[in-house]
Length: 66
Image 1 (tube, rainbow, N blue to C red):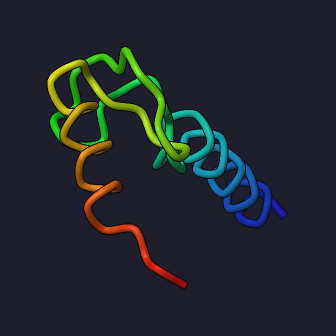
Image 2 (cartoon, rainbow, N blue to C red; image 1 turned 180 degrees about the horizontal axis):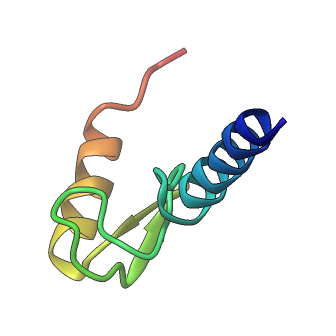
């Protein structure tokens, strides 16, 4: 009984740690390219001032004609 309880407690602690410190699925508060604070948003991603213009230019240059 104690062993099962300890396993369950350890599992719940692991889940809690993963939810608090795990991978962030696309946070927009950091630049997608360099990790600095994002000051702009474009197509669902965050960019710093330096990389925002690069991202917009790349998107314009790579627009599909479809």
